[in-house]
Length: 555
Ligand SMILES: Cc1cc2nc3c(=O)[nH]c(=O)nc-3n(C[C@H](O)[C@H](O)[C@H](O)COP(=O)(O)OP(=O)(O)OC[C@H]3O[C@@H](n4cnc5c(N)ncnc54)[C@H](O)[C@@H]3O)c2cc1C
Image (cartoon, rainbow, N blue to C red; front, side, top):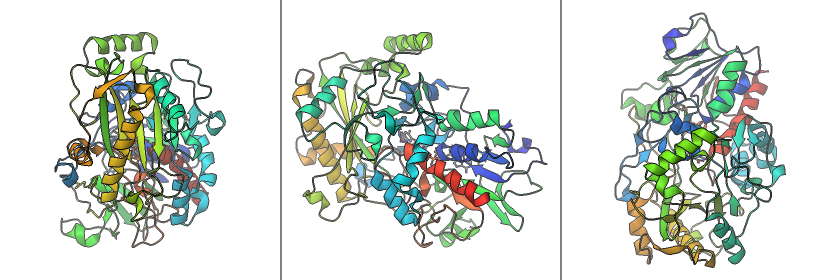
């Protein structure tokens, strides 16, 4: 059953599992546990229902970037001033809705590198997290479907690397643009940017066609793929939304979460999937630090809320001589109206597809690069240092969009940020990713911008690009530009990270919180480091295995 107020929960209901947070990971765990009819599961979500007011923002793929911040789907956090970005307070979106950030994100589906999973397995002391062992869970999660525009997708991915029977829809671009052939031509022309037939093979280096979590004309999220179907088909799972968990209680009878009404029997296992919980409910934490703000932590867990790490992003744009399809829609008005009419009439067109990019690419710094002289933070030799994505229009999440002209954008991302930080969880969260504060991150971003410029200078763009939108000639120019327009790509990770040593992490390799019984963490915060790509797919894959770990422990 579904409730929108915890006081509506029938007092006689008892649960074997409570999942806190109906987000990307939480819904996978809840739906998989509900497959066992002997167990009863309760999901508690702080945010809103995924249908109703303005729900086109989280359903229509092109609107993904408009779903947050500043909407009712978002927690609407901001960072504290970021020294390297002119002391700006950066918006820091997180989904506040069924599906969590999988309902509000940009739908880019990248599994990341084999090396990421193998390193996870090593740190966790469990090779079940390693690439070869965890790959079956990627297939279990995924349902690859044809692109929405019906174009022939052969040669654009490797079919045998994908799942076809899982709950989560993925597809290749559903709206082709006039830069697609040019991007591919660069891969023929310039060995620095080779073609990769499928970045989801575990070896993401090169330029590939991009997969998105889109089925037909609709976003696929963990709410639409897992939670709602589970609520429809199983009687042993309940959901209460509009209910923020503020405390966890451990007693001789078991564990419970506030604000639930008193239960006759408490749940045996709580799964926290409210990433990043340290932003919103400091139930565990460094006892001394929490005492200073009047919170009596039940468990002294010194690493909770620390080690926050995120990917910095910097878009660069060029003016072009072609009327592309994205800029007029972004400016609203008639083009947007026409797009909506086409969308509702046919389920096709610009709005029915991801607007971010049709290709995604990942690269390493050269082996002899001085940027690597202090060490290489990447988990292995086939894992990227930076990423380029190609926007058929003025793609940005930080700059004002020009009201005239046509543009081409390359989005630069540092894939292996080298800084992870101590920060204390407080009732009013202090979010400080300290973006681009290390020399490694700044130099890698400069290298990435230079690579973007080389990409755009390829012959493939000779008769297309007419000029630079910003003048970025010297490194100093790039640093100044970075300090104005760099931002987060919104991938906060590792604030409750796995480590077998309680002084280094919050949970063990089986995702159990150190020194607490019956409490696991399954979300992006559990990862011991940030994977070098877009992390939604790694979160899904990891949550699928986490559900099996829990099932095995309870069977
Ligand atoms: C705007 C945006 C764009 C992004 N784009 C991409 C992309 O294109 N591709 C990609 O791979 N990744 C992307 N990401 C990152 C990716 O979506 C996240 O890393 C991932 O979804 C995190 O999953 P999670 O389960 O850890 O957390 P979430 O999915 O955020 O789920 C956490 C849930 O817990 C709830 N919650 C939190 N605290 C409490 C509490 N105290 N009580 C009850 N409920 C609580 C939240 O409301 C939320 O529903 C993006 C993220 C954002 C925000």
